[in-house]
Image (tube, rainbow, N blue to C red; front, side):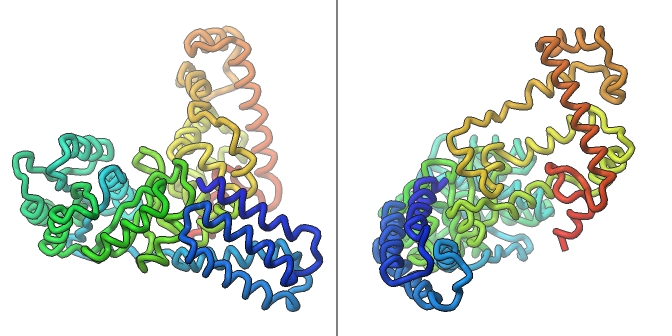
Length: 451
């Protein structure tokens, strides 16, 4: 995500390396590189020019004030602040206060609206403890109803559909009555993809909105389309006056133009970002965190939030007690692997750690890396999983045969587990030490971060 933009900005900052202070000359050189980086990222030239003019003004205004800060570091700070402002300043509010809340999803064909609808339903259900209803209002695409039905089954969310009805306004209105009758508190209306130039289709989405009067109207944008996406977002907004933008496919070859330009051009905030096909890969958009990632600083706050969403405080406290008593077993280890899997794509997660994104860019991190470990643990008997010390050579041979691994591989895994258990037990006895990295901050740390 944004790899080329990150590299180009990094190169721009390097022009200041070795300089003792910011001057009009070296600032101008750096600004020229930043502007080129933005234009190459498919940011409109006018926006790039205005952005760099602000950066230049800030840089020259602080050249004689912060002499203790290196010029390169100061420029990074200025660019980051301006990136945050360009993308909206702070996370936008998402209105879910209706009874039921009605959310209308609009966008171009192929932008990922239906997948996003499923992700949003999953987010509302798991994170906000809502009871959502998905509504199949795409009456044109042959597989649209089947797709949203499958997504609903995956996340255990009901789907309202009328296969024979070709009137999306009627379907949407009836779905709201259905939600009220079944005590469902959020209605997500997935509409047909359309082209901004298709007058009849645009009239239809406007009619749906006028009939159901949604609390939130979200426009879904394929982030890989860059400036074209921004232009389309502007055309749609003139027709339906939506409340916010959703950027999808951020895991693709995204240059960054849409993320950087849409708030400036349309005046509407980005509310969510999405990557991948899995239903749990949806995040609230935070301009400051996105700016950090664009500048190669990682996103440790989002990483911790994802971890906390999976690790229950009571479970963390239970594990802390077991670690202190040196009683961690294979059941505990297997449970932690499952929690890590739920956090999302491993490479994406590692990229959130400061300094890791660029280092891992060309490294292939296989999401099936834990498969062998899981097979070994699942080939153990319940007694062996609970009592690792019982596993002798004959048991290891049986586990190797059952898991499809060699005896050497089983030995290596058990040896690594023992080393990890000893290290964690030793760390738990040190003053101020809590849970290991995959359980950020332990129970006390989790409570502190939530406050």
